[in-house]
Amino acid sequence: MSSSGNAEFLIEPRWLLPFTPSSTVLEGHAVAVGDGRILAVGPAAELRLRYGSCLRIVRERHALLPGLVNAHTRACHSLLRGLSVRGPRLRWLEETLTPLEGRALTADLVRDGTRLGLAEMLRAGITCYADDSPLPEEAARVAAAAQVRALIGLPVRDAADAWAEDANAHLAQAEALWDEYRTHVRIGLYFMPQPAQGLSDGTLMRLRRVADELDARVVIHLDELPDGISIEGHGDRARDGSDSVADGSHRLRWTSSPRRLTHLQSLGLLRAGFGAIGALGCDAEEAQLLSRYGAALIACPQAELRLQRERVSLPGSRPGAIGTDTPAAAGALDMLAEARCAALLFGLTPLEALRLATLGGAMTLGLGGQIGSIETGKSADLACIDLDAAGCRPVTDVAAAILFGATRAQISDVWCSGRAAVSEGRLRLFDEAELAGLAAHWTQRLALEAAA
Image (tube, rainbow, N blue to C red):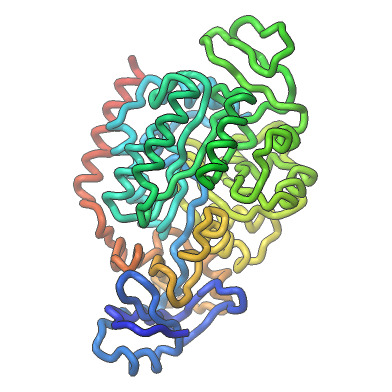
């Protein structure tokens, strides 16, 4: 696999996991990188002859794989760790997370929390992420400034929040931000309806029409959709038989039909480009319905287990991608840990689980032609992991050694579009002393907020 062009550097790992359709693990191979892209993949000796004058990055104990793809997170919540985490998810959101976020949420928190979360993800080998941010314009600016690939969710709900006052304003804000980033090379946008915060069928139908016009993805968290046609509120229940009720905080709460995805199907939302988060709460019938419409199922195993409903049912089909969800629930932005958990839950081989964390995520996010595998012409979003940091451990099954024997602390090098983000374990895109100061500042500030 080769392409014309001048290579800036060669990466020569011990093992290469390209995640192309036909390959598994390669030894003695190298990757040539130039102008932010992969120029060639092939035997190291051949590429050294072809690109003799370029820099060689030799990693004799390491495996090179595509940059990990976090298919769902809320990066700014890196500042909100330490909360009590107890399911079910809707109750935790209503009683714990949403009140704190409502008191503490500012543009500064989103900017600083996103920077800290992004730095943590880069250290963990994550080079692309889908972010469900409460203030998407702030999250997009942070990712754009860092020159990292991100898809930013555009929240849509009926009630007022920090971004907009009602559904009309949410959609207007979303379309304005869409125009701003329409041609951006690294920042993409998608719609993230917020049923847990109030969402009517009428708003969902309007959203579907806008998404169709823009050819935009729509992603909904299944565990934020109520299972039945009634909901416990803090105020009076609606008596007109409608799908929404007004509770004591004057919010509208959308209630689904008894079959959540069947209801979304009736609204025309199920299609290619639709994503459903929450694999552990998705039964076999719902998984088959998603597959029939070409929609994606995204698992966030650690957060889902911590916030599980009374009964967890494994779906009839495997998820297409995995994510970390909010670090307030999962605790860490760690895709290796999520892949390990997914392998155990869904009976995946190590290679299958790692594929979910790379090419599976890229394809689910609509980026399979750009990232997710090590192929000529794709962006050089890459991660290198040291499989023998102690210098004394034999490696026979490379994929298993990565999945079950390594941690994110062993990520030694990360490249985003050919640009070094982490080199020999050191973060390059951010000032680590500045990040430490930010973390200390927010620890104190949020402690005062909690006390107040």
